[in-house]
Image 1 (cartoon, rainbow, N blue to C red):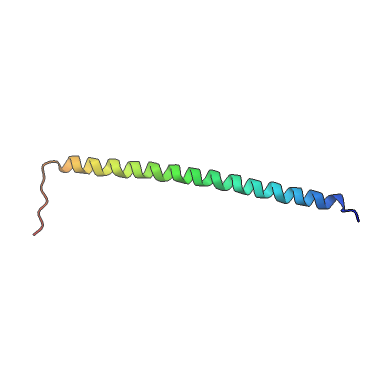
Image 2 (cartoon, helix red, strand yellow):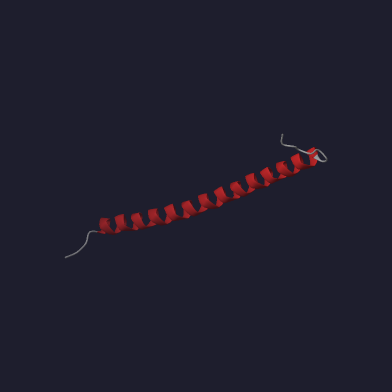
Length: 62
């Protein structure tokens, strides 16, 4: 029994599609992590600036 050539083409297409999906997923995760790190750095910078701005002010809870 012989397998038609189009079956091989479909299998190759599925494999290539799966590989591309994996590659794209990894790239998106890396970009997302970079963005999260940048946002974290910005947040920490703002916290430090606020801390410096307040400087000698004491916050009292009454």
